[in-house]
Length: 80
View 1 (tube, one colour):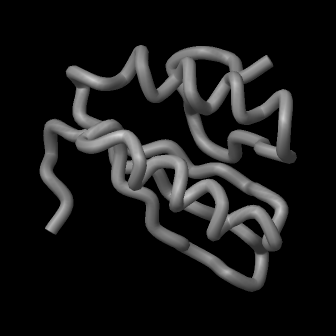
View 2 (tube, helix red, strand yellow; view 1 turned 45 degrees about the horizontal axis):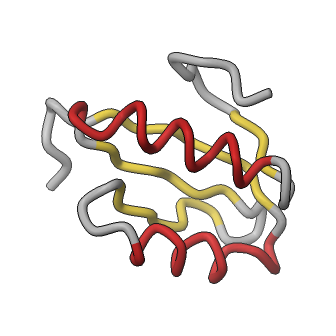
């Protein structure tokens, strides 16, 4: 069950990068939970604790310079 105080970002990514993105977030304990929403369209969801919003933004921003990431839902900050 998703907590109501978490923040969800939906991102479109390159399908071949999903495992890499998941492993990066697993390396940062408690930063965000990554789940695949639509494998066919390569859409992932980040479930973020408000306490880690800035850190998650920074990681996603840095990652966007390395792999394709496109926000597809409201995002508190632009990725680029």
